[in-house]
Length: 467
Ligand SMILES: Cc1cc2nc3c(=O)[nH]c(=O)nc-3n(C[C@H](O)[C@H](O)[C@H](O)COP(=O)(O)OP(=O)(O)OC[C@H]3O[C@@H](n4cnc5c(N)ncnc54)[C@H](O)[C@@H]3O)c2cc1C
Image (tube, rainbow, N blue to C red):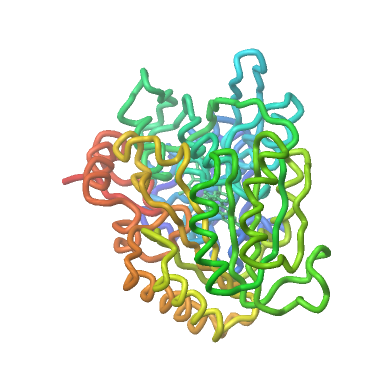
């Protein structure tokens, strides 16, 4: 083994010769012209310099890279789509294993299952399965990777109708800390399978996933842009929460509406509440399900129409572009006056004109899975909140995070608790504890002790192995 030093800071590229000999894919070092772009992640506030970037060509490369990192004691970061808000998809002075090349999709339309490489982007999977008139519930953005999305839970446009991504995960192939390629499912390594469904990248490196597919063709989709008022926000919780399961909304309270083509020009930059939605069912039933919004207030814009399901992903393309942002996330027991007032108050004095608060009304299939059945325990929470503050000037990072933190604290005062691991920032052990309530955390720590006792996979929302 050419890697002899245990301090990765002493490495020079030549020391990584062992890696080059064992990996079929590409390895980029800091002097490579492609290195600077390759080390970037979606959250532009994160700026780290790996000693080497391994672009895996297949599962064997994952096995080889795990072996080199483990034997040499080099920190190992794992990336599928690079959208970790905490920036866990890169590392200073360690090896970055980039799985974007593991992007094959095999669809068995008759059996309604698909295998997909962990580096597949959500948009590619949605397009490939839609060609068969089928879909698996993923998130709201095409550029997000299946690896991180799935392992954290996966909450998107079909959540109320078909559950989370993990509720449709049938099996995963995983490279473990000791370099084995194993399969996890209800029957094979069920403890690992339980932990993979919400426990993040703690337990191994997923190379492929097998998902269940559901028939899906044209949906009623798009966005209703409503005035940002107390009445509208209050009504949103009950309208979206009592709607048929076919309707899933991802609504965004915004300090300033973006200049999207369907938003009237005189509303650009003004506060608004965009109720993005998918109704996966009869079109008239969908129109009826969203009619109550129009009874609360006249929409500022109505961009709801029948569309092929993949078209929904165009709506979020701009928001998913690389940029700097501060975050916060929690779950609300209700969208009541206290919570609504906290949100409206914060948005009336934003630190960024682009500040926004996503209100995702859950329920439906999400709530029909028992909290202990997967590592995503927040099954009974009616509303997920995601605070996002995009900003431009790196010098202002602190004040935007302070604003997000202030709103989060107000929401906690209003009864909010817990956090969705896939939107937790770099908050250390406290953030991880928020994402995994006691029983879940302890069970994850036990599984971790079996599958990664030395905590090789620690550059993530880390659950250390139980002592
Ligand atoms: C613009 C945007 C929109 C989003 N929308 C949604 C949404 O609608 N619904 C939702 O649920 N989430 C959403 N998210 C959150 C997203 O699911 C997480 O950030 C997720 O971790 C991103 O996955 P990735 O593979 O792109 O990220 P990466 O940064 O590549 O991975 C994140 C972390 O996951 C782990 N990981 C990734 N791949 C693997 C693997 N193959 N094996 C083991 N560990 C792995 C690693 O710890 C890695 O550091 C969104 C995030 C952004 C930035």
